[in-house]
Image (cartoon, rainbow, N blue to C red; front, side, top):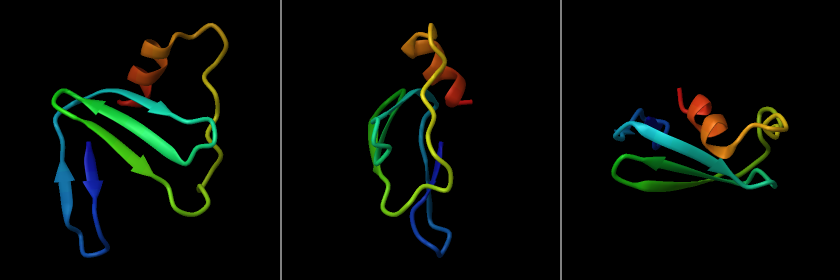
Length: 68
């Protein structure tokens, strides 16, 4: 995962993403990598609304497909 930290192009590259979890309000996203867990807080309105995964899909399969 590449995180752009500011408008000047400074970035951080993580180890491969294992899963992504989000809150229903859509203000925080938790990203688990091989070595760490990151909490991203969203300030402002999202560009598009987050959608719930389809019914019957387990947490692991939905989060792994999002990480690709």
